[in-house]
Image 1 (tube, helix red, strand yellow):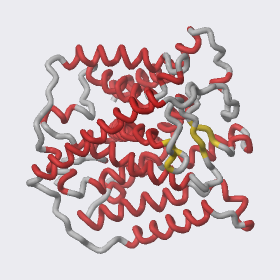
Image 2 (cartoon, rainbow, N blue to C red):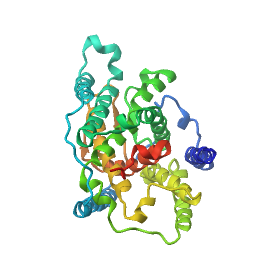
Image 3 (spheres, rainbow, N blue to C red):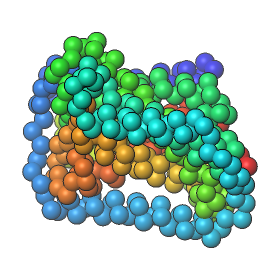
Length: 366
């Protein structure tokens, strides 16, 4: 227990401290980065560039191609699928569907009688979504994270709020997104308002993971592929930690060029530290030929990302993007290539879920 707390504190200090240290050493004032609520737009982003757009597009396509290839291989290798019970959709799942649809309507409309509550509507469809994906799990295999471990699943809500506040902190150094309604809040009101929305992130992604794992090609098949083993994992972890730490420290110094590291460096830093301390990581299963920890959370976050961006488009609690070099071809408010960031983000969600309790994801259960 003490070792786990010590690891968490070490990770928190490194992830929070590195960007601020980089800004301070570079001679920039740290004042703008601490503004709360964040209102001032102080990062001037580079114009669109076809060269960088094509480079990042290649990386996104390559990552998706690898993941899709793994799914096809998993489908071919699937010999031990989860039993599909095809039971009735639970009553609370139907309630979730109604909540989702009603929340969607309320978020996208501006009824005068609902005006005092309008700014809080973004959370409502996500509560419904969480109930629906858990209900789909229950229908297909007779269990879901909500019914199996309700206390730990509910614990993900406050953990999720803290988790996403960290990414809000990192965004201060690159300013890739901003909220249009921020100016209407005092600091405490903004904290409460935002935390409600942020609290649904981890439960939604985990619920989607567990639903996807009810499909044979994404469960039994992906656990029986060719293993990937690293000869000297601690040496590799040290190299990755050094590079990713430097990248995170410099995001506020070179935000136009290092903004993708907002989504990549935290994952690499945490897993590298885990390897160096002899802890298991979400990548440990690759040595057994089990790729579920890699594929499923990545696509779960991408699926949730579609709904995040769609429900954002007409929400009062709306955000917009300002991404250097690639700010073209928007799908809703998000530039097309920005969706690639959801892939590593899904893995980061799994890292945090496993810190709470790895059994919540638990792809190995039959």
